[in-house]
Length: 500
Image (cartoon, rainbow, N blue to C red; front, side, top):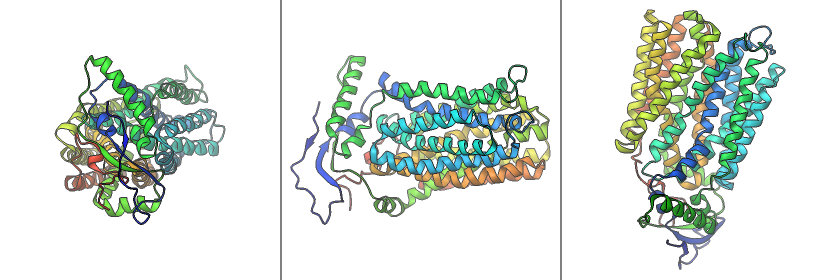
């Protein structure tokens, strides 16, 4: 295999070299990772990193489904359903936004692996402490801290996955991993049915056990994650090329032994000026000047999907109980159905993002889901829906919306330079989610809890309108990133052949 080498180029002059730069290195490591066939090693990455989304889905769904039980006398908490779906939900998202920004910066600076271990530990500790909540303020504080941990996961995990998965499979793998949130949502829905059954558990015990189970599953993931390596791309840029070489060579040996044949030679290499860190000024110039149109795209995608999901999911239980007289203990069955529809979207459509292409698939999934939600709002306003048919409509909407929402994370992860990847994921997630995920629960909780048909219709229309607007933006600005290397889509800031 080709060994990483230092070039004979002279170091940049102090007038042009960024602060903190090191040696000039020419490497084929990115190309070597991208030309790998799919293997058992890649499944290890998917399981070790991607399965945390299942925990997030479990967490969010459980809280939504137990909101009615928490507000009942004897639950152990003096809290209302509106506080759970409004204030607690907003605090969870606020924590996720703050956590994404804090941990995202740390991820770009100190590496993917350190941070995806730390953020999972924070998430697990906060979830465990939520299970022993004894007062409203404690529950609120722990919802914020749980979100703080999961926000860091989004930045660290998405950047690590995209840097380890071959370019030929990156789109579908990223979508399916982000879509696995809904496997957790199915589990959370079914778990809440059992936990809310007072024949099995007391009112103040069942909901606590749901959080405890999440901790157990998270500990299993933490053990598996220990075997996931640091991103060789990150190591290369940060002056640790020997470690990067050892990791990639070990991966290649495993895959050659599995396939029983030598791997093809990499097609290209890249020359970079190694550097330890990137300042906020350079990150800001990169995002808002060099890649201004891509930034508009990222904002649009995140805000659109955040509002659509908040329009449906945060008021889900309240809509079923208030308009269709579904008992609070049975709403989990309905949510399990729409969660399955959510997961099948990325699962069945994911490959098309690598074949048909990003622009067509991102714009069409956003526009279709928005149009279908407008149709659902119209039928709901006419009184034409039952709990079953409304759930069927939501399934159709979210089949496309889930693929679109997952593609938002894929998009901001791959269209910005390597050195800013985690921070960009964090930034767009925080801004978009703050707009839709903090404002959304506060607005939609009142609309869907009012019991007025027109208010719920308005909630649907807001989510649908913003989703369609994002789809139109994507039709014009989406980047054709399918099957292209990350370095081709956006040159690293440390690349010597990058325009300056």
